Length: 267
Image (cartoon, rainbow, N blue to C red; front, side, top):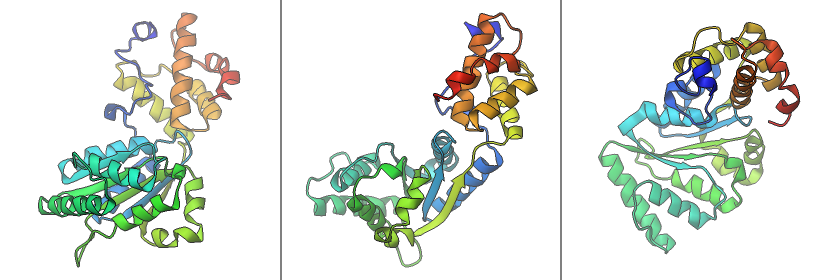
């Protein structure tokens, strides 16, 4: 459809976190560098940002950059009880049959963590949408996981990711003990106008498309409608390509993007 029309070999603004399309803005580079440092130091890290700003993409880039040095556990839906949370961690880290009894489950986790340490690998627990954690007990279990340590170093890293309200949740006095263990804090901002220009051109080129497919005015309008949020940029750019294809437009200008103004408020 529009891919052939615009000389694209694939969709340039897909929602899936394909590492080939990873565009590191200044903020994304700093977030990734801070997370890498936190994992290397076996610390607890907190990454926040508005919906669609690229937190999940950063976590995938973190995994790709550290490779075999770490064993990752990704929890994408943290609406779990404390016991469900521990069993999810155990399964993700390689325990095939997590014990039903909590004391036995913790024993399994302890043995696994120390075995991974002996192999030179660090378990990394990444919890996405952490603002949705429903129980204080789950936060307590997260804190207790950081107790795996030797005299000179921790043996596990935890990355908490979520929307800005996660910071407000953690500011509650009931989370003081966990908050004190967070060694890295970072808030991911949306893209600037200049970064939005670079972002769109970068993704079009990766997809095999021509430079300048989107005019500068079109990108400026996409930036204004998306507020620089990458997920919204992707939706608007895709829909602009569809509108342009329907009108046999050789390139995407601001007038085509302007047609998306009303639906942009729904994103």
